[in-house]
Length: 253
Image 1 (tube, one colour):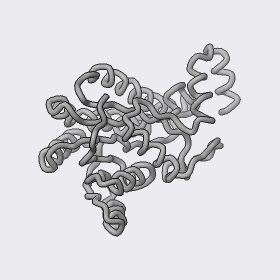
Image 2 (cartoon, rainbow, N blue to C red):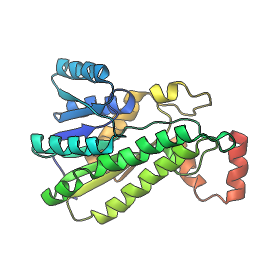
Image 3 (cartoon, rainbow, N blue to C red):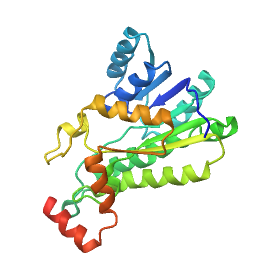
Image 4 (cartoon, rainbow, N blue to C red):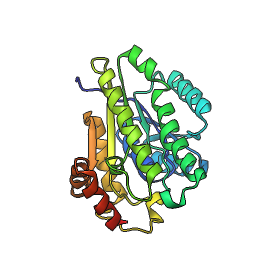
């Protein structure tokens, strides 16, 4: 695929963590970045930090679970900026959804954000990208997508949905000029992982993860998985027979 020059980008979930880091990283490389999120004070602080570095980040208050409003906002931004080149569906939530203590509210919250919100974000301006024959869709999945993690049924399933959704889009969009990238991070220091009560092997610093992601996205990689020490066994786990995987998962739990 021919190299693409990026002028504009939208990043959801940009008020903290990987989203915030990616928005700033892209802005420092000359992109006009729209930083989407629910917490306007954090987005305004991000914009000020970018401005101090001579970069442009524009705060956009949005809640991806409000699907119609999200899609309308993306279409308006696309029209206003002359076309979004890069759309990164990063907004996501986690939480325990254990089969023995299952409650609907946390399951619904994860699906509303990680599945419905991500799909709405990725598809809002896709027809316009196809028409322009340029654009790049990025979804932040997780290494947890490869197998169902004990106690995290909704989260693992939501990230598996996003990975499969993006894979189908990648196949459909071949030869259209629109790129598709799926990112599979492991454990990264963030607000979401700060309260985890379980071990997090190979926990990465946010800046290191952002650098890997940003560089891979601009190269047009179709998939990015990190850190390798966790990505490799996660992928191998996909081919384990269920009895072996189940026994290992129970021990980890």
